[in-house]
Length: 263
Image 1 (cartoon, one colour):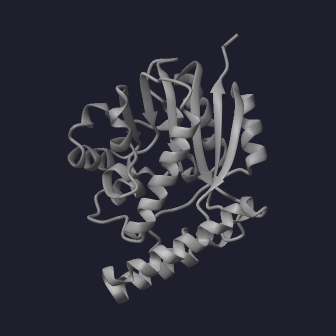
Image 2 (cartoon, helix red, strand yellow):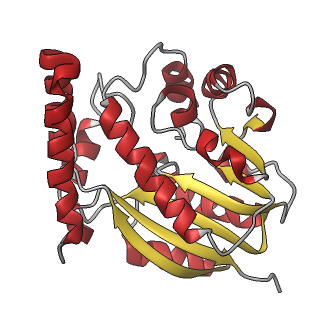
């Protein structure tokens, strides 16, 4: 999502907008997020789940909702771009009845109607802090008291984030990267919006931009014969997540927060 909706509408009309994400890297991203979601929602039984964008479900092997569909709950996926919602519905017709065109800043769902919101690197595409805060307020509105938010954002403590963000604003970039607060600021923003932050984490430690260029080069030069090399590199990068510096090497910062009762 971004203030420039036409950018995302045009992106959703492309045949392969996820060309830059190696299939094995997409699978890693999916598995890491699924593990986080399952770990942070194991103690609840949500009946209504909302995911805040459908880009992965429309185009990538990092899709999440099909993997969550066996939980016996109503799955809803939203996206501000009609083209992306349409593509996701064609790819997953079994889930399409729960897909809607909707902007996180102006959620059209009933207040307190959702038990669990999953937002995986969606809100970090807004251009400004004001838009980001509006989206947090929008998600707070649709979550019931006691409902849970699992949120991942680009990690601004990663030194490679800032040159990547600059490059995504140049012509020819796959898509723009927007505002993302530090995790300290994020926790304060969530608290002010009526959440209690209970967990935080840092996930996926591939060197941003550098690893993407490397994996694309390996795929183009070697095709599937390069898969063992990509797997080895992913395993090596994952070791960074065990070090005390993990909050600086992670691609994404993550928080789990509970919606407090409204006064």
